[in-house]
Amino acid sequence: MRIGQGYDVHRLVPGRKLILGGVEIAGEFGLLGHSDADVLCHAISDALLGAAALGDIGVHFPDSEAAYRGASSIELLRRVVEKLAEAGWRPCNIDSTVVLQRPKIAPYIAQMRQNIADAVCLPVDSVSVKATTSERMDAVGRGEGAAAMAVVLIDQ
Image (cartoon, rainbow, N blue to C red):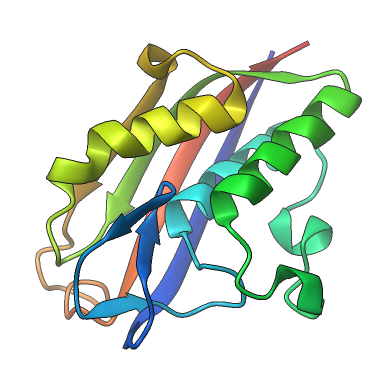
């Protein structure tokens, strides 16, 4: 068994969709990035890859490649799980936290958990998604961006 941790942060900008855990969340701002900028899926992907010592999502899906422009991060997460399987690993559980001042994402968490569980081939009760704010104390707290953290357990 191995443990991995992941972290991601993206700037909020007008004119983009806000995608978290593969769920589109209504609002006037979205996350800026080469892909759909889903910080939650990116943090989970990095945690899984790190646990297996396979690098990070930037190594496997570089933003310098046009093929990943606008890519669905939930689909990239599926591909990460395939890479883990090729290396002899499988996810056991995921614990994650999204840090976002607004909009409130509590109504979307059940769907995020289901999307992530489906992508990583786990039962939904093995996937935790939590939400918090940073109490307006930093760039995320000022509404300039969103961050996510994840801890995973993998097994052979």
